[in-house]
Length: 159
Image (cartoon, rainbow, N blue to C red; front, side, top):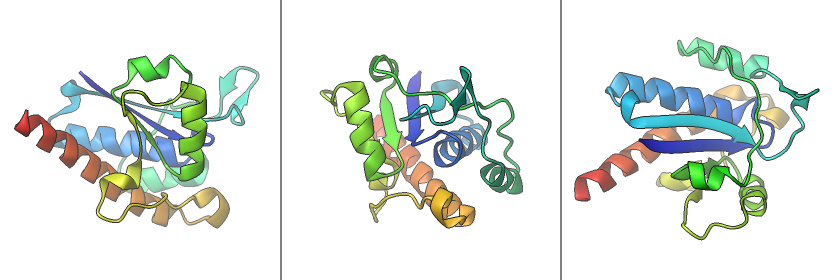
């Protein structure tokens, strides 16, 4: 089982979009049984009285527009233990990357990356929290997840 954890600031927009898009992609490719996919936040900003907030409504609408339901998802916080649990820990932007390294205690095994670093045009995933442009975030997530999966499958073929 190959385990991937997607990470953003609050775990209500970009990282759940990546989580649920990747799950959908794997299902369509017939690979769901080979992967475990989850998402988490670098902060507890979206945790209220010990309970994570659901996916932010505009992010949910964007997922639903593509026939993908994030039902049941609640924000969760990245922990140091996640480093041992996951094979890849994929952030959405450079700020996330710094927070991830701090929370996880570094990256001695090279598990941490940014989602769009797996594409031919590395950069941060567009942040809809500030722009309101959930479509741009979706396009980035879709491109990044496809490239990430292709890279994993190519590596398996070479092994």
